[in-house]
Image (cartoon, rainbow, N blue to C red; front, side, top):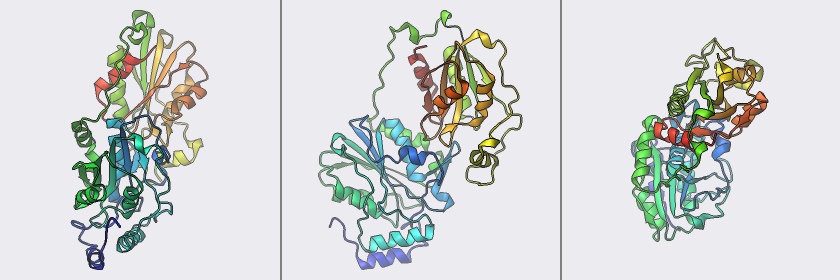
Length: 401
């Protein structure tokens, strides 16, 4: 056994349920319907990066302060942290999930976690990482449960050989930080290098994106991006390329920021899609089953959103059209549909771009292209919230248009 939990310690943890500052009960969740669940719950990560892997455990329950809402998507605290790390470092990602699902009711989860610790249990993990040996740096993320890692993390460390690898822990908590888990990991994996890691309170995670990015960058693990081929004439806009138009719908301002960066990089014109009946903050509350956006999601017939203006003056002068939107439930936010349906894209190059906290571009561009029926649609790009202007500009300059 790599760890022995005494009866005395188990009783002490149960008695300290209310004292979350030192021993915290489970308190973290993921959404029931967020598209991110399907995007990141990957049994075996594709080996796109032979060095870096992000592994995390994020357990749903029904407590509000155990989630973070980013760009309308509700994510578990550790789940969100894992996503930011993955995107920053250029890593593959693997979510630890129990073979027998845990309860989502908070009280039931608290009882189960306490029982697992008392029994020194090793819950079975649903999937495996087939190409684990190819990774050098392993980020391992978990919430603080009763002043310790969830017992399924012990199962994970038991299952894989970390010899010669670097382990970089990260966690979310309600006041206890890492507790003694860094030392525990070092004891469990004596042949690995274990860094000090990063711990963020659940009270701060909502606004911690830049803090996480800065920490990851300080580790020196980020990939060096390939520089665009400056010899390719098509990568730079030319006078012969015609005019560029950047069309966008933005619910919270993130897509608007990216649209402005693209317009500056291409010397393009901007066209904002404004709603005849704009969404209020309450309308955009994804956690309220009665909110407008949830009703529209559940009833596609209600997604016919009237725009103040759906056509553009001098439309024929534009050869390149960028179309931007947030990702809603894995697809393009439906206010853009009215613009797509109202215009003829024949002879134009159309480049979708999207913003989201975690979900990829998915099939959103393909679905819009199918809806349009005309135009030469490129693959496009998804940007995280807070993306820098330099990153957006580099993407624009890499395009062959």
